Length: 356
Image (cartoon, rainbow, N blue to C red; front, side, top):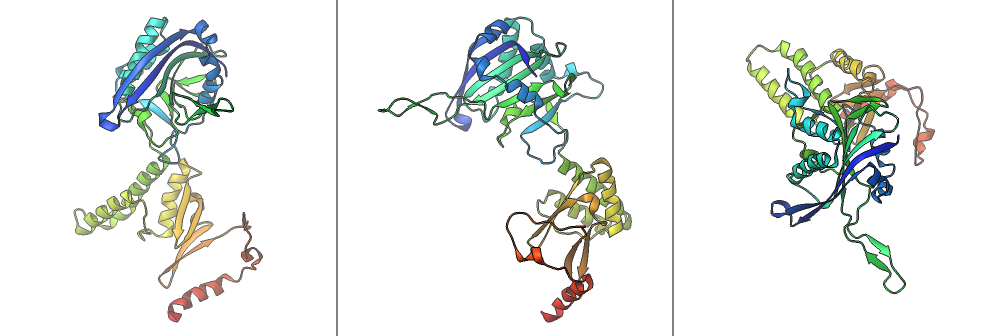
């Protein structure tokens, strides 16, 4: 997808010092219109980048809490329109600016808001208004940030070998904001935008104070699990009882723990029933657990059908059914194993306690 650039404002950010003592300044280099952009060297630098940005995949509810590409939405109180959101208004004005002066004025507000964030790094900051050549009805705003790259050099000659390049930038780890979000070609979501930053630092999204993000899938599943377990278990306790209070305390501890042990509160049927509600909305919901040093990864939908948990003489046992067993990378004698009878394995596990 090719874009026609309407306007582009180019700024350079200089940062001296660290953290709270840092001095942050910026300089506006140029604001270009369509003709000026076509004749500029920045055109070659950004060639293909806009297509890459709009083609980048983003999930409404990502599978992990920390992902490089996130879908944000403008925070709006119930009963209010999008234009009640200051961030939306700025993007909207920038998107439909008709003169260089108007566009530059709005771009200045973006960079000033960015400089107010805690962890600003030096580099190039670009605000771009563009229209896909294929869909002239939809204008886009792109905000791009290229951090200065340290220790960049070019080959000089035989005597000096290299020449250090100051204030070098590259598109390799370029951060970007795209508004509006385009779920598919020719369709846009006016209330959503896409933020991409490869680093774990979240400062590039911090300057947009009136934008929020949908919960990642692990958080949604955790909330659903807590609600279902409460519904199943709380019925067995009397209201305001010590047992119910202890249960709620245990649930809060469970919700905030990264590593959690098996709680042993629901039977297989109850777990399968709870899992079915999650699988109904998320068919590919994952099941991950670790027994001792052995990690097991599968689909939540398979629990109780092909993945089973049991207890034999106080020890946990996982049973996994499958039509075949495959091995990857690295050979072992297990690949030539002829599996024995299940009952014999259970007897062996049962006898371990008495031997010990």
